[in-house]
Structure formats: C-alpha cells, structure tokens
Length: 193
Image (cartoon, rainbow, N blue to C red; front, top):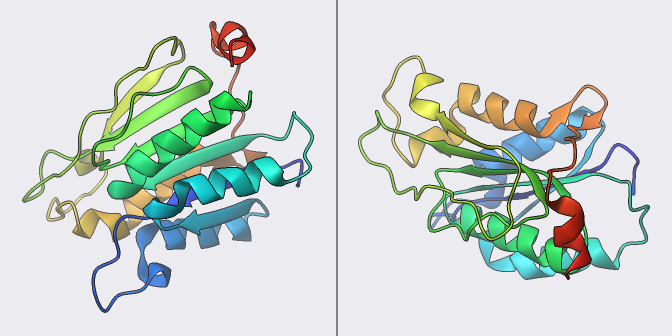
C-alpha cells in the first residue's frame, strides 16, 4: 500500500439501467486516483468484503485510510469504519453524503463529516451521530449551500460538481489522504478491541 494512503468510497444504490461508473462516488474515485492516491469504489452491499480486502493487505500501520459513502453507501461507510475499529485501525476521515441510516460513528474515527441537504425537493438522509467513545470532531455540512442553483435533490446532488469537489477535498490533500490528529479517546478505543 502506498504511503499516501487509501480511500474507500461506497456509492448509493445504482438505478436499473445505470452503472456504478456513472455514479458520483465513481467520479470522486477517478479524481482521487488522478491525484496519485489509491481509491476504490464499492456497491454498499459489499462493505464487509471491502474491509476484509483492506485488512488482508500487508501494510504499515502508519498508512492512512479514509472512507466516504453516499446514500445507502453512508451506512456501508460507517459499518466499514467500525470493522476497522475492531481490527485496531484508525480512520482519518469518515464522510457521509446524504447518508441513509448510517450507524453511529465509531471511536477509531478521527474526523467525521455529515453532508446533508435542506433546499432540494427531498432528502433521504439521516443525521450522523457519535457512537460510544467517539471523541473527534463531527462536522455538519449543508450541501445545499455548496450548490449555487439550489435545484438538486437527494438523487441529483450525487453528481453535483461542487458537492463532489467538497468530498474529494475533505478526504485528500496534495500529499495524499488528509491526515487528522488522533482523537482524544483513540488510544483507549483501539486498545479495547
């Protein structure tokens, strides 16, 4: 694994006749790869397979990992982070984007971001909430304020360039995965696995 880190993204459900390659999370994956950081996108049903794949790779414990999920992928991203907690791996950033029923943020997450909308026609998102022992920052970002034309709903925002740029910038910087300082309770969290 590259010292620049790895990003796991989980798309929402893919509508009939559509493909994962047309999803917004796939677009983010391509931009992150172009920046020189390893990134993979998964169907939300495959979060456990993605976690086991990550954990099976030989890696230096200092290699940073971040995760994001859109819609049903938000639930997958939170479950992925919890699986990494059980293995003693910190998650630099966990970002949910219009997340549908995410699980509480696990204590190994250093920074959590909950992107939701208020100005679209409808929103299916559920607010991200801290789990037991989570001690990092939990930021709330209203994507409706990022979108200048304000005409996107839950489905349309998944391909909104300003929102996708925010996701990418939250996960990586010019040098790789955006590293976060350890959360105050992280050492105790990872020791109790």
